[in-house]
Length: 420
Image (spheres, rainbow, N blue to C red):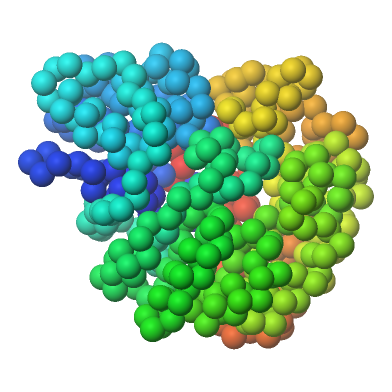
């Protein structure tokens, strides 16, 4: 299976932190074979929860060849005790301070079991070595990091827990100079919430206007209700936004901690304001909260088609370790397997907890059917008539059919296997 893949900017950041004189090689297990027999002194793997099983398999192969392995990333930070069972070193937190120490300790044969960052690093002077991506097939986008973190506390989200519920930004001047060097004028900001600091976001957008770039990003719905912020986004080249609407049920929004920012009653108004600026929307919805019933799927699908979102994501709730939601599920004994990410036979699309008013099977099927129905060719063409989508019609259609293919290929894919 070959899913839609983008450059993993995290690895470019790690390469940029690597001192001169250290030879760096990068291999993406999603799109190429890992060369286990390659002569190397250290292997570093960034671990997310969905990739943990596969990461541990890769680590085991290198360790069997007496090559030390360092594991980091969100999952290793959330559960360092588990990661330590599969590695020679675990990096907890952001790597700006830790990674150079890991390399020096590995060089001198004094690799420590745990490297922990006690404070948030400065984001000034960051370097992203994109040369490590040369010759690899990714989507034709230049990825850029403006900042890290999000000030909000959604119970299902690991970002706030990882970054301490705040948004830190790089100097705007450094971001602009980096963009000037990129080979493509189509950008994606990889921030979990680009407007988590609205005033700094406005500063960025003003600086982008002369560059004549087109960009996409993930933001909160509050962008629709800050007229200056939205106007600046459009003027600076915003072509599309990923927005987590999550649910049409206000009780669900309250349960997940999002209701203070926007109620479902205001969604249509927010969407109209964004579309009026010629900005396309990729809407994200989540099912499985305690107030969801079987009707939630058809109601949400109808809403997504009526609003003519360029793209939509229909996912079931997943309790990630380290989040408040995961702790609640453990306390309520609702997890079907714990740890679910290592459960035998676990596949992409499986529900790992017991919902309140749906069976686990119905929850998984409802999400799967919504994806298939939303990306039916007739629906794709109908949504393409929206002026915001029609401005870049060929691109909008290509993205829809690419996601349609990805949806069909990923469903049921077993974790612990290479995705290529």
